[in-house]
Image 1 (cartoon, helix red, strand yellow):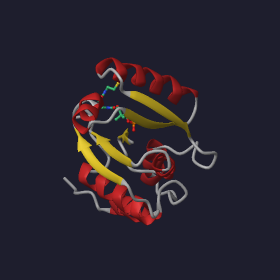
Image 2 (cartoon, rainbow, N blue to C red; image 1 turned 180 degrees about the vertical axis):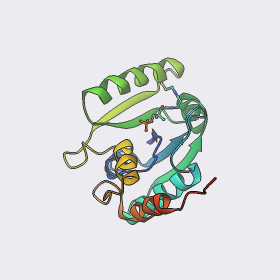
Image 3 (tube, helix red, strand yellow; image 1 turned 60 degrees about the vertical axis):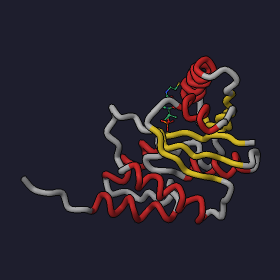
Image 4 (cartoon, helix red, strand yellow; image 1 turned 45 degrees about the vertical axis):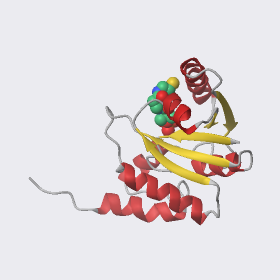
Length: 165
Ligand code: PNS
């Protein structure tokens, strides 16, 4: 069975990696979909996000995944890829509410498209990309939150001297 794990992955965190690893123990093939919101300015360029996902998965010894980038609706991607299962992680009540609404919408857009929600592990439940971006922007240590291969990329991102006007 094939499934899609969609997200912004800006950047991928240890929480994402935990869900990817657990999803791969359920399905034979996992499509990790970096979904782009054209109206939202991302933190990392999308190709960099994609490379970091691949690097983090390989670093963790995972296989059976592919990473795609898409600007459209998740339901349309699922239709094109012939996938009828979405897997997402939930960290708490707020996530559950949002993910439930998205799961219902996706099923309306593509009847038969089911969503499985995996509870975040106890080690990763407080990790989010937003938190990582905030800590990194203030010079904090993000190594607890992101895979090792991602840490240096983020540090470099913030230490790049900004151009003066
Ligand atoms: O990392 P996130 O913020 O949890 O990811 C949310 C994401 C990208 C999975 C969601 O916004 C999404 O599926 N976007 C694609 C556009 C779409 O299909 N929107 C309707 C979903 S109900």
